[in-house]
Length: 171
Image (cartoon, rainbow, N blue to C red; front, side, top):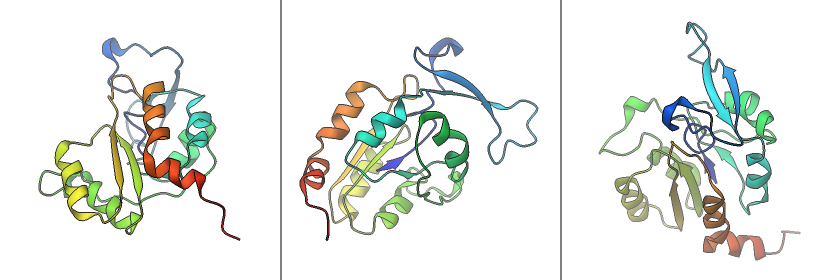
């Protein structure tokens, strides 16, 4: 499962600049923010890691935080170090797609995948379904509220996830 930070884990567009219930506030300086006058305000829910690890997926960071997600986000929410997709610059998007879309399909290399992000559009969904040979769940999360229980249920219930969870381990 490809996982974004800002939007799903950090509801950065929460109304009124008020921290949502259950979230803690962190002031972080990820790559690109080193010279900013103030650190970036990030809201994280410490129990999200537990919920994500309970899903039948291999988690992979797909975020502009890239490797900083392993040192700044993962420890706060209880995630171990995860693989990271190195993304193109956001200005490299083409055909109206999210700048991540083609890179994630290439990284998936024909395997089924889920992608959790606030930037997913209908155009991304259509593009992936026309070009990716396996199942793909593109799950958009509202950046005003972040991941909710309903999102975790949808991810748990997606058919390839249930099928993968039922398969025996390789010997």
